[in-house]
Length: 207
Image (tube, rainbow, N blue to C red; front, side, top):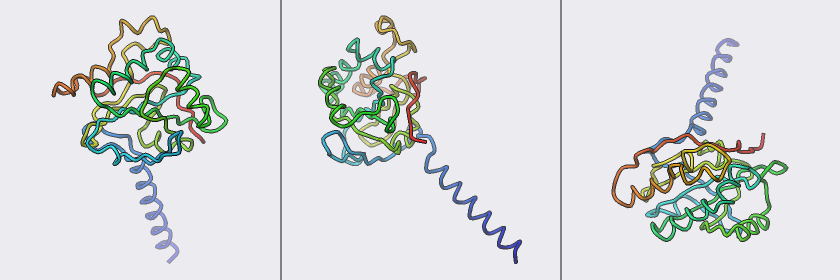
């Protein structure tokens, strides 16, 4: 009886672990993007289903990260936000997954101040303090970029561009992966590089 109970407990634990692992499995290009439910700096709740029929870009950020400062300081991130919105009618969500007490964590008010001071133009800045959304997407660094098409399918994940440096002078020579992917989608073409290497500072998740 004891042996049988031990086997049952072990099986149950194994099933629980398997379910847990499947719940946090990395997202897959060509499959439905992980759902999310997060609150933005204005107190509005956003879910992936809210954007059905629209293309969505997710940008993980940490304003203290030198790689993020590279793209915001040079205006590259803001230019891409505006291009995505104005040319392709894309919903751009900036995601902050830094946990309280870690680099990059900000209050809603501080996040809004950063948006204004940097002339950034995302559709919303969402706060993911417990890291649920970030872990669902396997977001590892800032910036880490994702594109979800109008059927809620994940079609791109990786870096913002091809030059993994913190030097803004390197931007003009880099391949701008997100821009190219959005242009290819708009032209009805397949994305040439749907998975690229993300680079930046590690996301500061809660333990």
